[in-house]
Image (cartoon, one colour):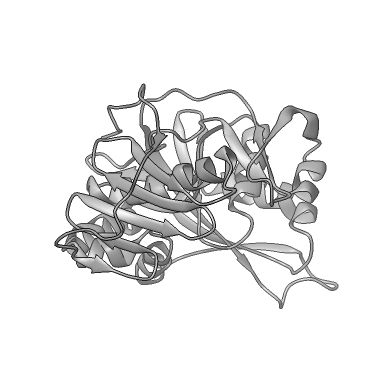
Length: 283
């Protein structure tokens, strides 16, 4: 179910410990126990993450509010969901007629394709971190995620005819901006109806098509979904691998999934065709 603490602050400044007592997961950036984690991003700060509580941030020198917020709505939000037993995918979710289409994966293009779908009449449910729930399969944004907004690079925003003066800063060091695209969706979970995996295919182009779509079998679908799970090693070390596998196999078995391959080059040139093929995945 979605986070019930939606009205509270998503983070506050304060001291953070260097280590988590009884940590089950240790990696260069994260230490995590069953209910608490410390996420250390040296250029931004340390983040104390606990289930059901605002994130505490001990920021690095010169880190701005935008720097902190970018982490909190992205990897930190996904880590908090992990502690609370909610699986998240990297990607963008769009509500199209009351059905959620999730564009997932770690490659460039998920936010761009999500924005193109929203401009065609959809609503951006979540961008960057997409929460997935079962019984029934559904989609929503984590607490603090800016529903209805998506992060785009300048070339994509220009291709979609979006006004940069109506956008906001993501981080001062990044050229990407946050755009309101389409209407703001409701906070309620939306039934998961389709999954789309964008992929770069160097064999396309030339005298042939720039974009092609193909379906994915269950085993390939599970592998692709697992690659898109936020903090999968943390899930494993917290003993939740079986939960992850059950949910991923459920999605692969009952939700239509397509891979949309595009030629190398500017993604802006292929967005219209990609959006059309993505919508065709909806049952």
